[in-house]
Each structure stands twice: as C-alpha cells, then as structure tokens.
Amino acid sequence: MRTRFRYDADLDAVVEIRNNYFEERPEGPSLIRDDLGAGVNGIKHLPSGKMLDSKSAHYRENKARGLVHVGNETNFAVKRERVDPNEFGQAVKDAGDQLKSNWNGVASERRTEREERAYAERNR
Image (cartoon, rainbow, N blue to C red; front, side):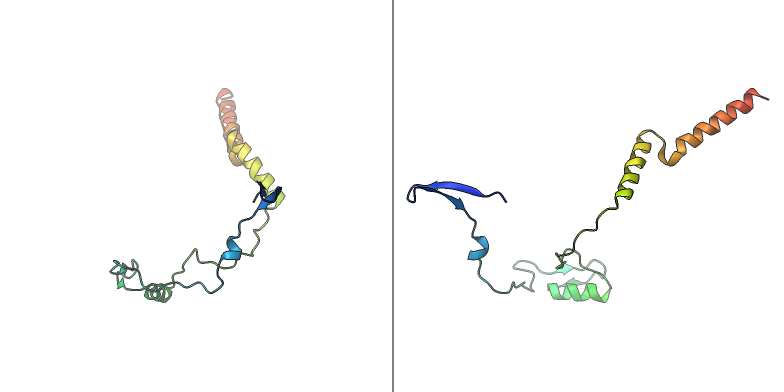
C-alpha cells in the first residue's frame, strides 16, 4: 500500500498516516458458529437428499461420501509454480500458428493435399 502523509497544524509538521487495524484488533481465536442462524430450518444435502440442521452435520455427511470442501485452504505460504520459459515460448508460437490458421501444421497439411490433388488431376 502507498504511504500517505498529511500536514498536522498542531505539530507544524508533515506526518505519516497509518492504518492501525492490526494493532487495534483484539487477539484471540476465531470462532465459527455451528448452527445455521435464525430463520433457517435446515439445509438440504444435495448428494444424499437429507435435511441437515448444522454445519458439522453437513461436513460429516460430505466426509462420509468422500467429498472435499474447497475454499477453506490454510496453507497460504505456498509459492506459485514458475512457468518454464520454453513452455511459454511454445504457447506463444502455437497461438501465432492458430491465428495464421496453421494450428499444429494442419493448414500446411491441407494445402499440400490440395496441391497433390490438383497435380494428380492435371496429369491424368
């Protein structure tokens, strides 16, 4: 984030503006309620067709069926895999060939086939 400054007349100086969100945030564990909330009579588990009354029941049902929840990953330190420069170059070449209507040499093959047919017809 960009560093921001403002003039403070009381100090007669330019001071840095800081967001103290993380310093003001109380420490402690994050808790997730197990119930579905007021006014919700349950959720239908689509694979089984059962009506469930809590999140934990939903998670148990999914686990019993071998299903996996996505979006709850906690390993944020994993770095992205770097793309091989040669692979990128090949992708660019393939895109260029596709734009020239020569995807994987198909246009060249068709042109050769047309020329061979034309030659065969001329020399019958």
